[in-house]
Amino acid sequence: MEAKAIARHIRIAPRKIRIVADLVRGKNIGEAFAILKFTPKVGADVVTKVLTSAIANAEHNFDMNVENLYVSEIFVDQGPTMKRIHPRSRGQAFKILKRSSHVTVVVKERA
Image (cartoon, rainbow, N blue to C red; front, side):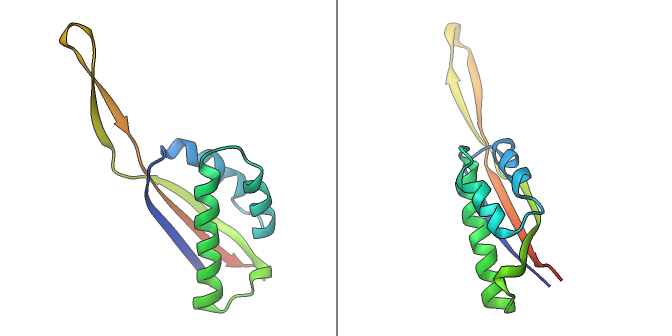
């Protein structure tokens, strides 16, 4: 049995969140929360929120025991990119790409 949570259109670049996601993949939820609490990356707050939601989904929807849960899968996909123009000298225009992310966390019960 597995429960998952997805956060879409997070306004942080996917490569910044993937650094944090790699830290908690495969860990027990207590250990994952401890790692996220002391990680000074901006993606740690986002991953914490999605992990909390996945645990709540597991407890409420599937009656799983919270003590036995672990992060079985966590991945970050690229969302839509907002394109902006920054004017430069001599009439040039440079593109600014404001990237967004979709974060998915799947928790399972250890047997």
